[in-house]
Image (cartoon, rainbow, N blue to C red; front, side):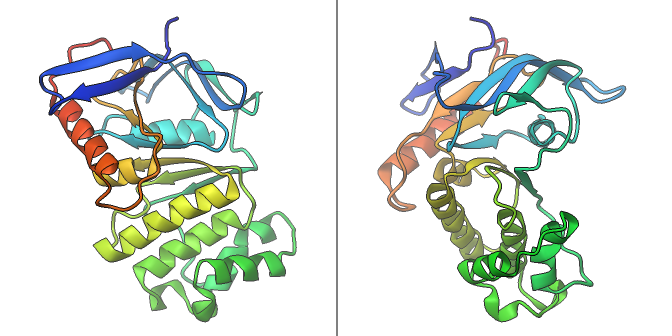
Length: 274
């Protein structure tokens, strides 16, 4: 069946042997269906050609690969900000032709309005929709630990607090799909790890489907129960690393093994038609 993802397993340091086998994905709980899409920017090279992928509701997937491989573009395709030149993307069975109400996108730059307070930034989406959400806003301010800085402006708070504000602004709208584009890359290590922990916690508690773009192997392995590896475009068949076990900590042996697999796979001189 063309377009089915590969599941990648590795032995040793992944250089000795890489085993590829097709994964037949059950459609019982599918939320996202990427069906034979192709995409390229005007006058640019092709990034995706006849590319297919399925993701179940409530799953978390990390996307990792080198700069320029199409990671962020794939996120924008899922968000409905750009459209495939061929094929289609369906979420909950509906073809995506533009932004979807229950999809939230969090960017690396936070996207906060500097002239609005933390509270006003969190409320922004609700106000645009004409919804009063004082109680929901208060809930997420408290839950994300930014209640005490609610009346401060973005330039008056730390980078971690700004990112928590961006997450609160997204979650107050009750999304079922959360797309994150390198959201923690500009933060210091302790803050980054704290927000990674928060993302895993929220994903499990809220039943969110989370797709995270990252350059960091450890972050991909910690957050993604599936990891999509994008290498040299154009991409045709997904390389998917299955990572079902939730790590018990950052020194968890299973987590470290997934990191070793990823490093090995990214060093392999791939000649497959992927």
